[in-house]
Image (cartoon, rainbow, N blue to C red; front, top):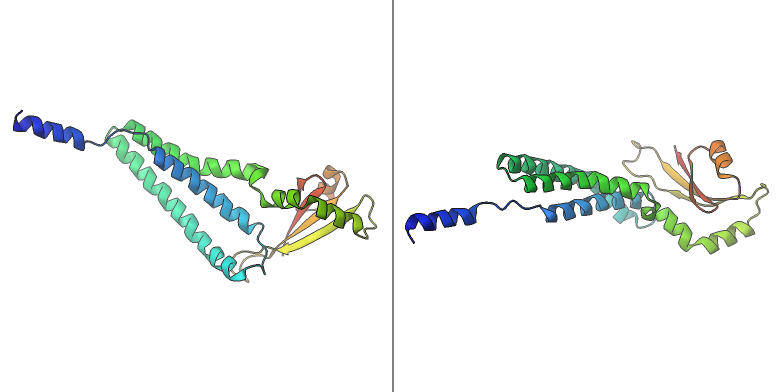
Length: 197
């Protein structure tokens, strides 16, 4: 074996492998899940409960979103570099990873499985139904506000206050939604009403 053969062999070993970037795709799914988990947590977490931690995480929100955007931009640049080097699988893996973040986020937002309000109602259904049955509601069909929360996020005085009410109602869902603005169905006879002030 000559020196030239060893040099060609070393160059072949040093050449980047055209692989699919599976690790990057997994990281993208985790980023999309983390982003939605962050948004969903603040849609449920009331003020007054662990305020210090909530305040720190509220301020960290823009940093998390900035980190996700910067990561996607780096992956986009690496996709172009991979295309330039004719590593098509690596470029396709980067593009799939970039598209996985918004796709994963959209899927999680569209499904009720990721909504903490659904799980809150499902896990406490019997307690809420008992509270609704014991309430002195004169409305027919029964309409009871079970719980109200202030889930305001952002800087005080700059953003609107966001209040959520958990409602039990035996009314027709379409009729109820048309008569009360900001109302959305959660599960069974349970609804949530969002008010911004």
